[in-house]
Length: 169
Image 1: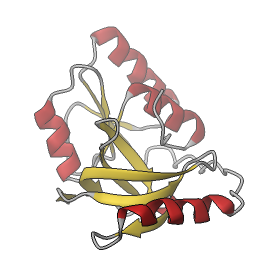
Image 2: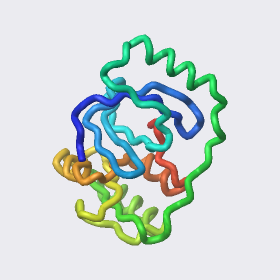
Image 3: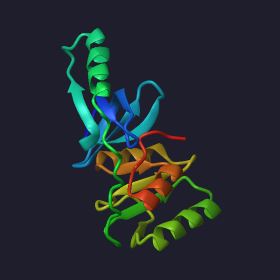
Image 4: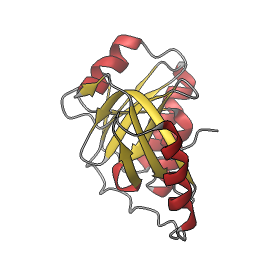
């Protein structure tokens, strides 16, 4: 499901950083919220359990900073990596890559236990890994289905740690 309205929330990242985030073109799954960050114009993925507070349209602009500082004063929890998903339980698709890089990523996926590497967006797809030449129609279709779009570095981090990083390189 996609929601074109802006979402504003306070978010605690994997390293305990507390920040104010504004996103549009939002899609959600049970675990993740994904949208375009307004300050960077980049597609980002956020874990819902790390959203500390969400704001509606009625809050005054100055109140954001006050609430942000209140959350920052709380001692940040130690980051805990999420356990890796069971082998074969996640379907991925790679799009927009040159053949050599795509082959490398598919190899990483297979060695890591991703049993299903799909050539296209399917109804059971979990992650779409997007290269520089990813087609916007495929990305839109995947996001409309609640699929999480990742770049190659985010995918490698996910495979290694079970975490989707909330900050890009």
